[in-house]
Amino acid sequence: MDRNKKNRKGVMYSTNPNFEFEYENEEMDTLANNQQNLRVCIDKHRAGKIAVIIKDFIGTTDDLKALGKILKVKCGVGGSAKNGEIIIQGDLRDKVMDILAKEGYNYKRVGG
Image (tube, rainbow, N blue to C red):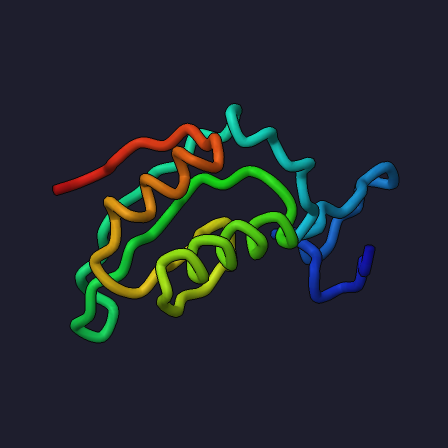
């Protein structure tokens, strides 16, 4: 793992001789599909377009991107997967929830 000064989190200097820096981007192990509790919501503020956002994914960036790719391919749209969120372009929340159910994920519909 790359542990350089740019990834240090919140502390610039410490006089504590036993101090250890916390680093950003330390990834957790990916939970099993049936243990994930994802939130599926709609965002209408992305440049005036509608997007579906899947939040609260717990796991590695690679697994997040893999799930994002599955959703994008099966929905036939674009999107992105970063910072623990998957963004799917378009008003496809019901279709996304069907795909998550078939993949074995626990999810909750949030908002309207």
